[in-house]
Image (cartoon, rainbow, N blue to C red; front, side, top):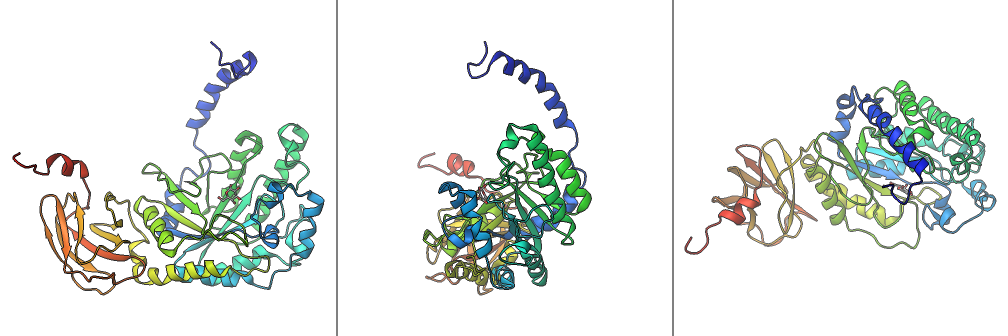
Length: 435
Ligand code: GLC
């Protein structure tokens, strides 16, 4: 029986398209051949800065303000003339990122609003020809490089400003023009700024991968930038997945990056005061590192380029912790110890890092380890920690009453092999009275 949602014609189209789609999945996609090589630095880096900056930053009511307040294009466009950020604002962001322990940056070169922060020959709606009168992407690239950070470009496929941006879905001539525009801008971005490390596509509405000609798009990208990595939001798998505002690991072998905000908005939102604590951000980073992922943490600078004080405060606290503990994050491998009521975990080789975020006091306990603990120390002080281990638990004892580090205290635990936790064994085999 036909599914009631499909007409007979649609259904026939679907089943005849299925074998072709399946066959195309077998074909290697652009970038498949040397993914491991290209991704190496990124896997080690673990922690990056996302930057949402555009005309919406002047209004301070979230980056979706144009759409969610239904602002007419002609009215919104006026902002382009008023956009006059201070020179080299990106310097401040890059310094902040480096001090926070972030190893790469990804900035919106064009968000859904359609305004380009770069110099484009394909439109006048860009920074060089409007209020800023200069190339903000060039400044950003220079700033990131000056601080030794890798450079990423976010680029929105969806475009609320371009005349073809919506009708491309129903008008083939418009689609052709629009795809040429989008491909052309990606070409500009990847031609005019030297070596770029990440291309971060966003929102593919209203077209499919076929409509965007995404295979051709990625082919061009890798031709222009053979070392680059790309995400999955042009509807191809790309090099990594992009869980948004949540941490969700992919199966081993597939890279992923959780992107998250510090409050509830990506773009500057003056009244959004729902800030996460530095501890929450660090717990998120630890969880990403534990599960083989990266953490891309966002700032939304104001229209003048300044960073909201709250974000500076959070990133500075993160940075102070990373100075002492960063080596437990960078280069961390997937960790198969996960369960605790007060700690997160990362791992490098046979060393397990227990990151205690709710300090229980003089004794810290870890259950279900399948290996022998050889030694342990407190990272904050370098002091060895005494411990007792039996079949089911290891207890770290004689610890200070109050946490020696802030906001998370890490115990480095040397094991005789890769530490793995098995809570099932604890539940089944822990001796019961009389058994
Ligand atoms: C979403 C939103 C956008 C934000 C992005 C970040 O797709 O539309 O505003 O830039 O996610 O991941």
